[in-house]
Image 1 (spheres, one colour):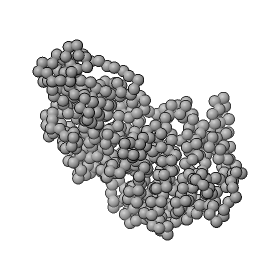
Image 2 (tube, rainbow, N blue to C red):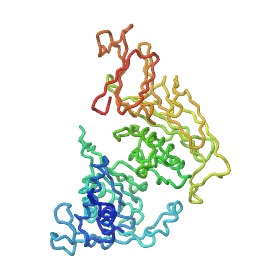
Image 3 (spheres, rainbow, N blue to C red):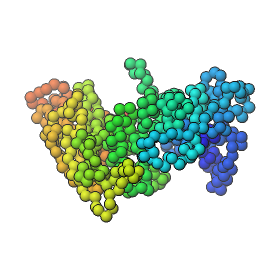
Image 4 (spheres, rainbow, N blue to C red):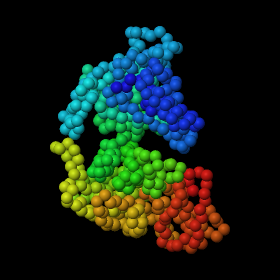
Length: 552
């Protein structure tokens, strides 16, 4: 249970003392172990975390630091000890510690928050999926919960304020669906989830909004980004409550030591995203860039339209793989939507039928500046993830008999797989240019149903950029993007149509001509590297302008 609002003990003694030797630092850290709130004040203890965050940002170039906590504080909630150290301040949301000398006299009738130790009542379905929860510490000993908005406002203010003061930029809030399971006696699970979720969102909006992205649009809608990742929150009691936070973990964890978990991880996230994308941005979780399945995970993050982060041990990285996912400035050429399965594999058992590839599609939007409209290109990934599926009866992943090899699967890539090409303002009939990321091959596809066939061995994959070809003046042209990235067209910011540029008219007249002297196209991109484009005629000149802005 949560016993105090102190940083993890490993951070309490972190001081910026570059002249200190290792022994002194070790002694400082060891001296903090076992000390209580009375021994080490909030200000002193928070300096350790503040110094750590400062070092990460100022010395190591880390832009944002997030901290983890459970929706109800920690795995078993709030301890009675902690409840007795928190008071409500009559005005505003500022809370004071009972041990602080400046604390006003305590109103014993309404001063401390009131936790209740509740034993969860797990559903039959949850017990079927995860029977181990029947004998975990929460089920055996209960969880300390708060059941009033006033108590929860106090709790989150007291939890988040020190993090913000230490320079922390956001939080990952875990164990959210567990709260609803212990709602008996507190108004029911949905009511308790509503209390926690609403109060939590109000607090993270107050403490961890990205000021640089805050904007009130013309419809007076608050569009500011909030640095919060929701996790273990797929229960309807939680997911339907979100009003401000917008990122949700879409899967179980990345398990580096479970070799059979990686293919089924992709399956779970892709299919879960079909629903989750309607509420939040699905998060495909972290991975490790030197892991044997790193390439598979990297391809999945490229098609997923999701945040990209790794849990590499410092110094253990595959920089060449990471360069295919992330620009030098740390930004990501993220696809514009959430990657979901294509129609032709939507109802197939891509993990166990032995013949079907998992295909995931997405869309990269960019602006056509002379038309004044948003256009874009599609992206389709195909994976062989056969061999593992969840077994509800055995309550674990069912792995195909290791003595039997997992056979290659056939996959077919079509422009029609990208839903945006089928209807709406970006509907297109062809032709298209397709670029294969793994094969590094180009193919002109004349219609929506033109095909590219490929055979994928176990855990093999490929990603195809599908771009509509612009035809004008007898010329065919299409931008593809940065060819060394896993999502090439995610780098494109804007383009324009083919423009007739007459002699002496560098900007182009923009008017049709039967015999234009020259034809030009402009493309704005971010990042650096090999830029690929398809042209039916060899260009006579290529001009590159580099600007200080992230688009060149």
